[in-house]
Amino acid sequence: MARFRTRLTLLGSAAALTAGALAPAQLVGAQPAAAADYDWVALGDSYTAGVIQAAGDVFEFPRNGCERTDRSYPQVIDRDLGSFFELTNVSCGAATIKDVTSNAQVPTGRGVPGNPDPESPFAPVPPQSDAVKSGTDVITVGVGGNTLGFGDLLFKCVELGQGSGGVGTPCKDELAASIPARLTKVGTEYDEMLAKLHEKGPHAKILAVGYPTIIPEDTSKCRYNDIHQFLSITSGDLDWLRQDVLEPLNKTIEKSAGTQDSASFVNLYDSTENHSVCDAGKWVEGILDSDNKLTLVHPNAKGHLNAADHVTSEMLNAIAPKG
Image (cartoon, rainbow, N blue to C red; front, side, top):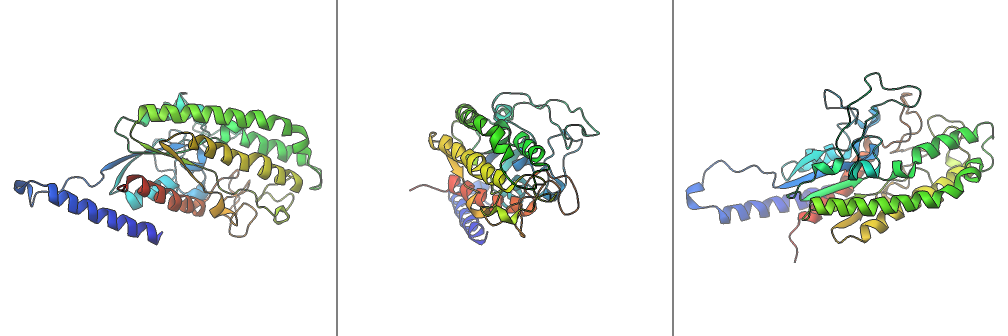
């Protein structure tokens, strides 16, 4: 983070010198203008919004069910870069790509099937792309997992692994055939979303934020029937989910971002490879966290801090003078 703060200081000095050089003589000594010169819109699903208690407290009241938390990466960056970027954060738990592009989403809060949020039902929220304006400078967007149906896959794998003793690949055997079509859907809808965001914010740099490492390469670290990890998902199915579902999901997002001149991909996967659900220094919680709070495989505050560092670097690159 120190290198980002150094760049931030240099950018601040350049901005101050430029402002001084351009200020008319009669304005010398006047109150300086607001420092936030760039408009930033944060879009995405629960991996952006935060959602779980391990990613902070919900800070918006009355709640709208999107569950944006105060230690999620947009809020961390806002505290660091608020003098440069005016943040509009409309990320929302459970959002799909279509919810960013065009759908009015009905948020679920912290409810799960069979156990709805006590304050639900929540009113629909507008499509997240509505927050993007012609003057928006930077858009960050982290979405795709819900369009893929990762949560449903996860729970199905838990169900199919029950009683297996951790042996075999019951989930892969039943669901592998559906994955190529799911990934194709993500790619098609992601392309449409990026085109929509560019249309609404034609001068904005779009940062497509990928997903972190969730499952370790060495799945022997994952204990079968541990509810603080992946509960009853077998080791073989965890390998399959990593290799054939999660890594291709990131590749699909990266490929889509690569087709748009206005977009670039923010890789969180490599920096988190030793901080999976099954690692001692985890940055993603399991089904439950250490306090037995429901977390359903989401990044904790440390995971969001890492995301903030990487997204910060790309945001500063986006506004840095070229040439």
